[in-house]
Structure formats: C-alpha cells, structure tokens
Image 1 (tube, rainbow, N blue to C red):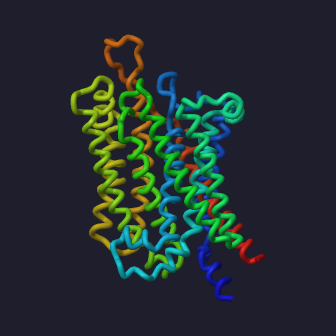
Image 2: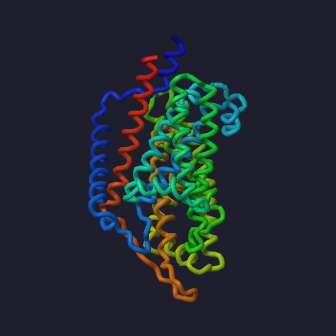
Image 3: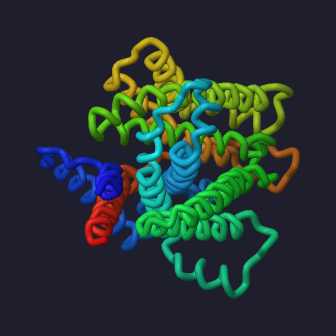
Length: 392
C-alpha cells in the first residue's frame, strides 16, 4: 500500500481551476496551427528568410527545444543519485532526498515533450521531412555533422521513452541503465549540435572552439529554469523542498553561461577577424543589439541572477526561471541570425556586406504556439503514467 501511495505522489496535483490553463493552451495551439497551415500552403515564402539568410526563427526554436531537453535529462539524475546532490549542494548532511527521488520521472516526461516539439518544428521548417528520413537511411553522409545530429537525437528520444516505460513497470535497474544511456547520448547530441555550427568555416561568427561547451551549459541553464517553474506549480511541500535547491543550480549555470558569452563576444572583437568582427558588432550595436543587451544578457542572465541572490520567496524564484527561459530563446535567435548576417562572397578580398532578417508573424505564431505542444504533451504523458500505475 505504501508503494502505491509513493508512486502516486510523483504525479502533479490537478489545479482546482483549470480554465485559465486550458484557455492559454488553446490560444497557443491556434497560433501554432495557423502558422503550420500557412507554412504548408506557401512554403518559405511566408517567412522572412532569404536565399542568403536560410535559417530563421524555426531553426532557433528547434535548437532551443532540443538543447533544453538535454538539460532536463541531465538534471533528472538528481533524483537517482544522492552523492550528486551532496556534490552539487555541498551539504554532507543532505539526507532528505525523497522529493528529489520523486522528481525523477517528471523531468524525463518534460524532456520527451521538449524533444518531440523540436522535431515537429524542424519538420515544418524542412517542409519535406520524409525526404530527410528516407535519404538518411538510403544514402547518409557520415562525414556530415547534420546526419549525426539526426541519428543522435533520434536515439536519444528512444532512450528517454524507454526510461519512462521501465519506470512505469517498476524495473529500477533498467531505468538506471537507460538513464545513463540517455544522458550519454544527450551530451553527445547537444555537443554535436554545437559542432554543426562550429564546423562551418564559411560562417566566421560560429567558428568558436568552445561553442559545443556553451551549448551544454545553456542546456543545463534551460533545464534548471524549466524544472524550477515545473515544481513551483506542484504541491506546497515539493515547492518548498525543490525550488530553493534548483535556484542554487540556476546561479551556478548563469555564472558559467555569462562567462562563456563574454568570451564569445571578446573572441569576435580581438584581432578584428574579418566577417566575425562585423557579425559581432552587428550583435552589439546593430539590429540585434536590443535583443542581445536587453533580452539575452539583461532579462536572461543578469536580472535572474540578481533576483535569485537577493530574493528567496518561491514566486520570485519562479519568475527568475521564466526570465531565463525567455532570455535563452532570444540567445538562440541571436546566435543563429548573427551567424548568417554577413553575406558570403566568392572573392576573398570582397568588401563585407551585411544582410537583414526580420521574422514574420507566421514564424512568431509557430514558435510561440509550439509551447502548446509542451503543455499538451506533458500533461498527456503524466496522465498516461497515472492511468498505468492505477491499473497495475
């Protein structure tokens, strides 16, 4: 009987008034459907992308959701390993681990919805995703980082689903095995995603040697912020137990990402390397300057850091998590856009020409509306686990 009660306690309690959540989800879903229909009907002509700026807001959203999935998966290990808790928080007397053990399945379900949403967004961006699936099997180019990105994230999703399945049938050894496999594959997939950008010699702004490392730490930052928000809306006991500890992780990851971001900017300024310098200045003083200084740096890093260090109530910490998620979304947009803003010229000594890119309402509707996929997928996953546990 105690085992049944413990298993049920891992599931979130349903709020008394679900109307606001249903309305918000419905509006987001309508936005997403509208953008998807227009995209399928008109193709890339409905977007602000051009023949030279090929990757727009949807690619930024794909990277955002895929990287966030890895952060959620990595942080889910806090529910499996007590020694990790003591190592992270530096408390040798840390013995009350029940809430962390109970959190184990929630981040994995949320990670699955993040990665599934990333695949849906990418499929709409490609317009013909079946061609990719067919030729990835029939004639893959194993020297391409893109093909490994697809393979690794596909295998990663399988491992995540397997982890949830074995948790449902109470096979703890199998859960731990697939947790290790998922973490390993997730790290490989995320660092490979960073290498997709870092190994493009024609895009000077992306050729940063530590870009894969930055992707991993932004994944951890995004995952910590998402979990902080998730557990704020659970029971009061769970909120009091987990939110303060997750806020400590938030401080750690904000500081690391902030340092890596500063070095990434400095490496673009030092020496005034052609094309990379112009792209960096476009980010600092050009059309992306507000997006970088206000939203990525200010809203996404500095303001949440100030809040977490000075305010301790759970609501303020949850607000800091929201700011981080919004800021990281702008960070993905800044990275993708700044990397393409310099026109590619066949002549080596040709003058540097800056391009322009402005997302359309269709792109915004799909990216913002994709949040409905997260909400719907998470609550359906929780309900599936709940029904299975009740039946068994």
